[in-house]
Image (cartoon, rainbow, N blue to C red; front, side):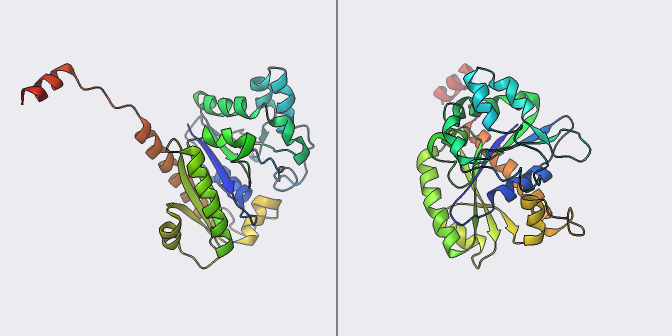
Length: 273
C-alpha cells in the first residue's frame, strides 16, 4: 500500500481537482480501498465543492484534533470518512478538510500521529492520497509529506506556475532529501512542454493532465457530468497518472530496500580469486 501527498504552489494550480481525479481512477485490486485526506491548512474544498454541501461539518479533519487530545485518534479516524461511491461500496473514501482555516492551529499536535496512522493502515489494504494544498507540505503539517512514499507537485505549465513550482521544488528537495520520491503533475494550460519542464526544473513529469474546465468542474464543484465524462480526456489522463504514481513508489521502495547479505561462501570464493 502507498501514501501519496499532492502539493501545489501559487496561482491555484488544481491540487484538489487532481487529487479527486486520482481518487476516482485509482486502481483497486479486490479487497483494497483508497482514502483521500484533505489536509490543506488553508481549509478544505471538497465538502462545499464536489459534495455540494450535502453533508454538514460532522465529518472532517477538525474532529480528529479533539480525538487526538483524548487519545482516540485511531477510532475517530474511521468515523470521519465519507463514502463517495454511488453504490456505497466504501472503497473510495474522503476525509474532508478543515472548514475554517482558523482551526489549523488546533491540528498542530495531531499531524505527526496522523502521519503515522496513514503509514500504518496499509495492513488494512488502504492506499492514502493526501491533499496538502499550497502550503501544507511545509510548516507543522510537513510531517505528512515527510512520511509519504512520494510527493507530487501540481503546477500549470505557464511561466508563473513554473516559477512558483521551482521555488517549491527546491524547498521540497531540501526538506525531504532522498527518502521520498518527488514527482510532478503538469496541468496543460500553458506553452511549456514536459521536456522543457524536465530540462529546466530537473524533475521528471510524472503525468500531464489536460486543461478541461468543464470536466474539472465535476471534481472541484460537483458540476453536472458532461457526456462520456468517465471516458473523457481528463479521466483517461488521470488513470494513466495513477499508474505512473504507483511506478514512482515502486522505484522508491526498490531503492530503499535492504540488499541481501553476501553469503560467507561467496566471500570466501571472492577472496580466493
